[in-house]
Length: 246
Image 1 (cartoon, one colour):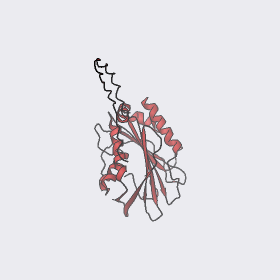
Image 2 (tube, helix red, strand yellow; image 1 turned 30 degrees about the horizontal axis):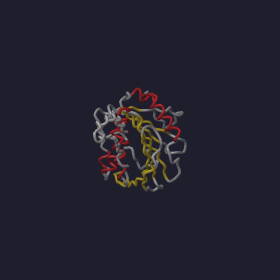
Image 3 (spheres, rainbow, N blue to C red; image 1 turned 135 degrees about the horizontal axis):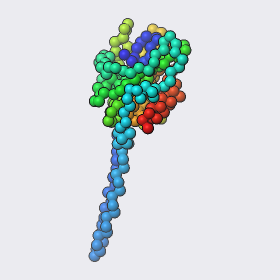
Image 4 (cartoon, helix red, strand yellow; image 1 turned 30 degrees about the vertical axis):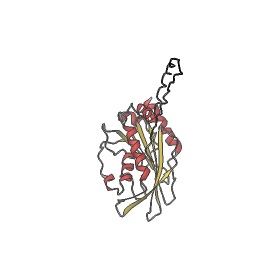
């Protein structure tokens, strides 16, 4: 389950594209033939159409692994990039609010999709820190565009939810942050829950670039950890994904 309460753990309204087409009319003066109508201007291409076109090159598992961030020197808790074998998960069913359930399932690539996405997960460990995680999910056809719209839709109303945890009930409050300028589209938000050792804050950065949705999570407990996933690492990951799809 991507949101955990243990100390050593890691982890908007829908975009509407409006195309306006100006229609040029023609008039006729008395005793004169009507002027020839001007040819209609081509209809502008909506952002959503551009997004669909840019999401047409899905990556294989091997390509996703190759495009993942290089790992630091391994330590006792080091985890390599792993290909997700199963696309079946039930943890999202335990989230009390439907909007939050939609948001988190889409962000973590657990939403049903046909064809199923190719997904790899990566864990990062930093000294004296709870670390972070990334999920790279590549979708066929225009799947990435549709799933990112679900992220936006859930984030537009998800503000609080509860879910069972090993020792207590997780009570998460969702705060929307300004969207970073990354990839084709991106959102950022935080989920804060009280724990015995202080506030449990998980920052989410979700980016779509072409056919891939990259989700970065960073856990901070009691204000004792780095609060955000390193922006330079996010930018590097997006660049690697863009190169893999070029």
